[in-house]
Length: 96
Length: 379
Image (cartoon, rainbow over all chains, first blue to last red; front, top):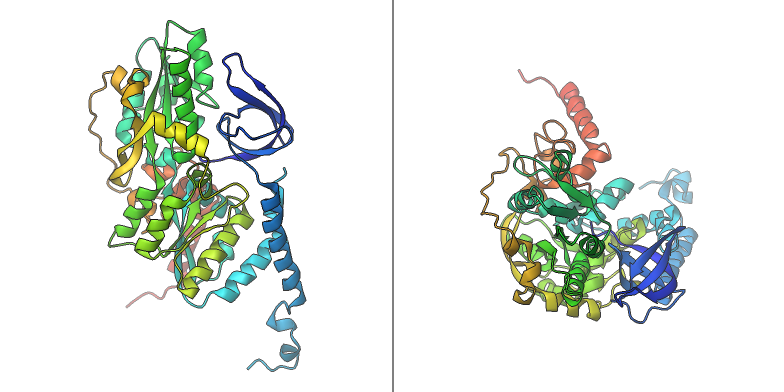
């Protein structure tokens, strides 16, 4: 129910009632989205959309920063010995 | 899709699980608040990747599930009236009231329509001036800006034949209620990412401090949920109890001010009854007096309805994280998504429905059979 998905704003205009709307692309599906709650959003920005309303601009810098931190953890992890069975101690039969 | 696919990376998920294994030294119970998170956890089997010490219990954050039976009966009574076009999100159609559901009413001739957004109802109202258009406005804080905007625009555009039947619920009072229960087992929360996109997370800070419980605002994709779990476990292991934000790509501490301002103009806080849980003080929204012309509860004379839930159903305990779906004797037998007995089975995001959809009722039956076969017969 609280499902919200990110989409890219392609075009911004006001509807006949004066409501700020944006044509938004969700992985190939294009829908009209209400942008009244995201007044700073520009064409090309990603927004998080719930029941036809953009609730937030997706902060691309923040997304990149946190994702990079995860990837660094992955790279650090790969430098470590994956598990005990492949350690030299296990190969020597020393499991104490 | 950008901002979705990268958060489903299997290798990164494995690394997060390893980091969780390194972090945990003793048993902990965590609750994910939101039904969307529960659905993701069960769909991707994330709870089964975690070490045995970490137990995830499933929270009350499915608004379809917790909409009270009385409110569903009210919706059905309004939808059955002549001259009404009753609009709803699709997931409310199959939720059973005491005697029927919206889909049954539709098959009997009622004008029940599924809409993608409440704002779509305004168009229906403009093109059907002789009808009364009612929208079933359920949801947590996430949905409140959309519902508030529909009423705000109806008033601004002088659309008199549009009203909403409000059954809004709020997260912070519900988690405070869980923590106050003498049976509570929850030691940390994965907070509701999309609720906090709207509201921010300032109101969770006094809860974390008062109950000394870590709350990590968390997203909905597998990597979000695993990272949120890791952040919560680090706090628990270090004895900290803070509000942290895992979902920083969309959630800000102050939330969306434009949305909160309009929600506060249109709605005010009220007591609300939760299906399976009971009444929680100050845990819902109702329309303010200025918007009474758009309040379906005032416009339609629907009497107070007295209802009774099936006695076998333990959904109240599941919603509070005290029991799991397979602890219920009716789970997957008398109670299925086609014939739900209670709150947690009525929507795909309910814990019982998620367990059923991803085959866990079959696995629990197999476990029971296996344990019967292997257990020695007592003399």
